[in-house]
Length: 253
Picture 1 (cartoon, rainbow, N blue to C red):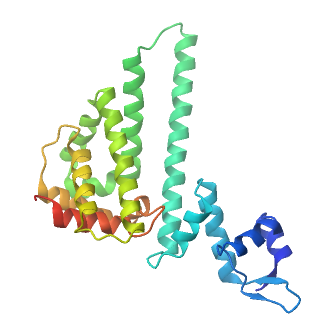
Picture 2 (picture 1 turned 90 degrees about the horizontal axis):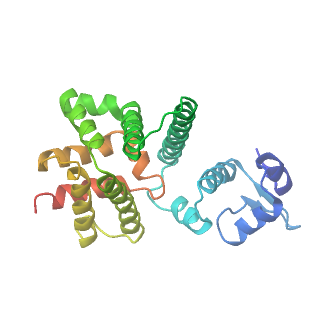
Picture 3 (picture 1 turned 180 degrees about the vertical axis):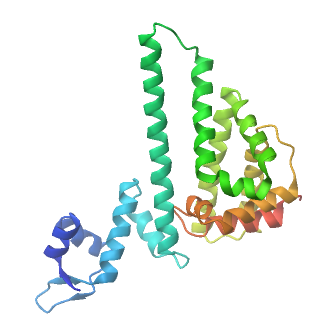
């Protein structure tokens, strides 16, 4: 199937002006250009435009989208799973906000008051419930019920400061991974060592004792389970394997 630029614009909801701009910056080239200068797009270009729109919906800049789509390690199925994981996470976040608002409304209607500590505890409980829903089955099969339950209890026991640090570490790990992979660095580099150290802090901030074998096992699980891979590879493909390889090289050193 082949589409003219106007037909593709109608199909996708993207303006012809935007499609011409995508062509100009090398983000979406037409499959062919006729002698009269008209652009035509085939199935591969339609798929690529769909990927572009997914990334744009998540707020990714055009330059970064091009870099991601053109990366040698880019895998469309993995990327789509990443989009789905982020959308489901956003859905869980919105559902949590809805539940929080409903709870607050009910509290006000009952003329009761919730302390800041109670509000924060309710928020952490929703985080644990979302983690259990999304990853509980695989984690319990790998580590057992007792360990997963203990991890959940550790999260519930975090202070506000500890929780904020835990969240910040998670964001730092993603940023450092994406930077390292984008720059073509190796897991054995200083960047790999830094990511491993950050991930170790992220694992132990809840009070768990560090275990090198479990650290490596979790990193391997990230690669083995498509949903974990989709999470770390959502913006830049290859981040999950970089993390796994870095942990295997640097853990314990």
